[in-house]
Amino acid sequence: MVPLKRRKVASSNGGQSSETDPSKESRFPQAVIFILERRMGASRRTFLAQLGRSKGFRIEDTYSESVTYIISENNSGDEVRTWLGVRGQHQSRPPVHLLDISWYTESMREGLPVAILDRHRLQEQQGDPVEAPAFLAASYACQRNTPQPGHNTLLTAALSVLAESAELNGDEGRGLAFRRSEGLLRSLDRRVQGLAELRGLPCLGDHSRRVIQDLLENGVSSEVEETKSSPRYKAMKLLTGIFGVGVKTAKRWFTEGICSLAQLETSGHSLNAAQQAGLKYYTDLNQPVSREEADAVSVMVEGVVHSVLPGARVTLAGGFRRGKMSGHDVDFLITHPDEGKEEGLIHKIIACLESRGLLLYQQNTRNTYRESAKGAGRPSSSMDRFERCFSIFKLTNDSSPEDTRRAQQDPERVRVEADQTGSGGRPWRAVRVDLVVSPISQFAFALLGWTGSKLFERETRRWAVRERSMSLSSHALYDRNQERYLRASSEEEIFAHLGLEYVSPTGRNA
Ligand code: UTP
Ligand code: MN
Image (tube, rainbow, N blue to C red; front, side, top):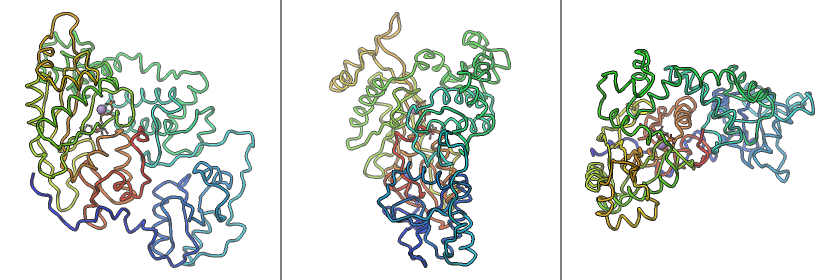
C-alpha cells in the first residue's frame, strides 16, 4: 500500500475537538450551560452553542453533574425534569436552573449571564394530568441507543415494509423518511400506547404517524397490507433477492413482465457470474443465516486467515456484531497490527479457501483508497475502497463451531466432505460472506462503518457534516474547519472526535 500522505496529524488520544473541550477557558466559570435539543433540533442547538462559546460561555455538549444551567425551548419544567430522570439524575446534586431560551438570548445580547428573573424560569405543564408522558428522543439515530428488536416490533415491522417498498421503487428520499421513523420507534424504551405519547418527537412525518395510528387503533395498517400483497412489491422483492441483482435490473425485468424465477430463466436474458450464482443458490441465500452458522463461518475464516498470515486479526462485523440472532450474510473485517502486512492478503485467503473447497463463488476487489490532500475525495456513503471479497461459502451441515474447529486441524477431511455435493439432500448449504481487509491505521473507521446498521452509519455521517463540518467514511475522518485528518485507534475515539456520546454496537440497531 502506498504510505498515507501525512498532513497535520491530530494526536489519536486527543479525544475531543477544541470546540467541545470542557477545560477550555470560560469567562463565566459559575455558569456551566447545557442546551436541550428536544423541540429545538440539532442544527439550531449547534448554532446557539457556537454563539455562546464565541462569547466566552462554557457550553457542554453532553449533560453531566457539572451542568448548572439547562436551557430549553418550548418545553415545560415537568418535561425537562422527566428528561433528567431518564438520564438517571438524582436530587443529591447542586440545584440546576431550568431556564427558557429567552434567558440565553438575552445573555448573548448582553455578553454575560444576565440575572435570572421569574419569566426566565420554565413554566409547569398546563395539560391533562392523566395523559401518558411523552417520549423523549434526540434527532439523529447516532445520538440514541437502539437495541434489537426494540419494544415496538409491530410498528417497526410495518414501517420497514413501507421503507423497503419505497426503496424498491427507487424512491430513496421516501425510503429514508420511513427508515428514520422506524429507527426512532425502535429506540423507544417502552411500548407506544397512543399517538399522543409521540408528540414533539423528531423524525416522525405525517405519513408515518397515520400508519402508526392505524396500527394502534386497528392492529393492522391497510396501506402496509396492500403494499405486501401488491404484485410489483412481490416481484421486486423476489428479483432483488437474487444475489447480484439490484433495483435497476429488477425494475427492467419487471417492466418486461418477469415476475418469477422460472420466467427469468426462460427469458433468454444473459446473467453475469454473480447473478448465475445467485439464481443457483437462491433458496439457500434467502434463508436467514443463524447465529450458530455465523459462528461456524467465523471459525472457518479465522483458521484460513491465521494459516496464511499469522498474527492477522479477524473481527465479526455487520448485524451479528450488533447482537442480531440472524442475518442475510456474515461480514468480517481483517487486519494486521503491522501496517502493510495486510496488503494483498485477500488473494492469499481466497486461494486457501479454494484449495479447501470452501468457496462456491467469489468476486474480489483490490484496495484503491488514497488519502486526498483536501480530505474530500471520499466515495459515496455506502461505497468504500478496501481490499474486499464478496463470496458464497459452502457450509457443511454439521458445521457447528466445535466441529468446524476440529476440522481446521484436518483440512483434508473438510475438502473431501465438501466435494460430496449435488444429488439429493446435500450435506451443505450456501452462505453469503463478505471479507474486508483494512490497514490497521484505518481499522477503527472500517469497524464503525461495517458494523452498521445502514441507517446508523448514514446518520453518523450526516451528523458529522451538518453538525461538525467533518466528513466521515469507512477509511477516515476529516475536519473541514481545521483542514486535517483526525486519527483514531478505537471507535470510542471517533465518537469523541464527533462530539457524540459513545454508542455500543448492540445499541446501533437503528
Ligand atoms: P449488511 O448489508 O451486511 O447489513 O452491511 P447488516 O446490518 O449486517 O444486516 P444483515 O443481517 O446482513 O442483513 C453491514 C454494514 O456494512 C456496511 C453497511 O453500511 C452496513 O453498515 N457496508 C455494506 C458497507 O460499508 N459497504 C458495502 O458495500 C456494504
Ligand atoms: Mn451483514
